[in-house]
Amino acid sequence: MSPLASWELLGKQLWPPLCSKAAQDGDYSQFANPRLERNYNQQEIARMAFCAAAAIRHSTRRRPKMSQIVRALEGDTSIEDLSKGGRAPLSYFSRSKQGSPSTSSTTQERFKESSRLLDLLLRDYTLNSFKNQHYSIKTGVLRRIHLPSNYSGINLDAVRFRCGSLRRYGAQLQEFHIGVGAVLEPCGERLVVVRQILGSNWSDIYYKNYDLSVGMNK
Image 1 (cartoon, helix red, strand yellow):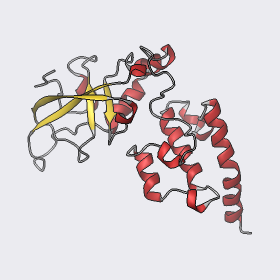
Image 2 (cartoon, one colour):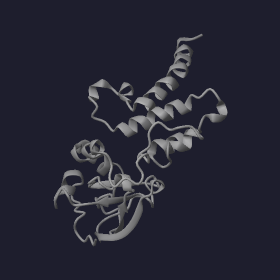
Image 3 (tube, one colour):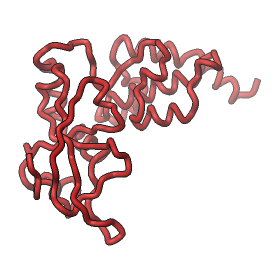
């Protein structure tokens, strides 16, 4: 057996148990580079680990197609869809506390205090700024997202809403318009909620020459 084949066999034997243990413990740090010092999105690490485990299942029929894995990694589909009835290790929004007026204080503090997480949310799936003449100037439409009850206590400045990834957890939408100059991303359901907690110049931090506060009607 070649060294490469040996490594592949070892990976298929070790990876699923590691993912299962990480799912039970809620600790995916073993899959991340220690140099990051936990400065990364835990949910994305969990998503990557679960996709890797699904891709090397012993049963060929239970392995998802590469296109399914790509959609799961991009957030177009949930990792529950890859599990085919199995328990996914971590979803974007836990439903274990449905009906609760707010989420745990630990979760709230993680969202409120982590500027890195906010940066990821803003940078990932939001509206593009008007950068050059190749884009047509038009009035964009945003939709305010009403989060499920178990996440209603979190003060988010931006939440990505991509292809139903929040809708399946009970999020509801309310449309409002923004001013001329905004261009929507290609995905029609890629929407953003904006609460101007950071002040009028928050957009200059993340998107140069783009002021989302102008023309916003709440």
